Image 1: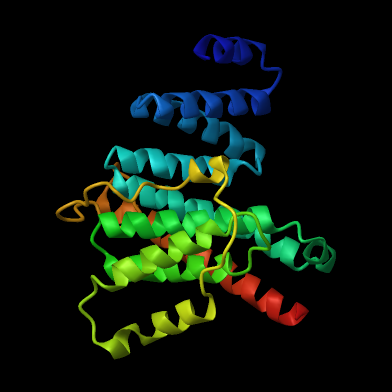
Image 2: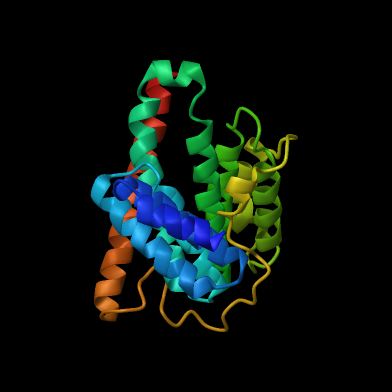
Length: 255
């Protein structure tokens, strides 16, 4: 398989083809537990995709999130989960404003990626012992999973199970958890087929041992000053919230 991918790399006619080949290299290395090599190829692919505004950028961010999490680089992994959310919302908002797109029901792929991104964000918050933020991410994922038209409804059950598990770890009175109970009750898990192999590969594994302390803080890089890291993370978070609110307003106006 590696020889075939090397030939594909040599034959790639443009940057888009090269990016796809590097993503395939990363998948191969992940399967073979060569995680650092996978990160190298994913970062190369991401650099091309960001230059060309590729629609695959969000998937590469999610792939990087899952891979970095397996390397216990949870600050970086969380940052990629948040950036994936921004990319998905940037595509999602204008399409939701297009009534024709809604009628065609062609938004399921974006919805499924949104669910994966919230799942991965929740997992990384758990690894960093930020349980309330993890629960908020899982609850948001449950909301979107309830809108999936079909196919990937196992995502709904996965998110609900994760939300219930992390809720049990939070030492808050019942009143403090009421809003999450309300969110979860409005988006119950749905029956459906198993998650596709493609989406399953983007999910961050939950079985890894969490860190004892969140040394590098939430959603930040592992380079640069701490002040710079927090500024970057805050900007990504604010952009995500803004796009999410824009999407909800658009859906309300169209309903």
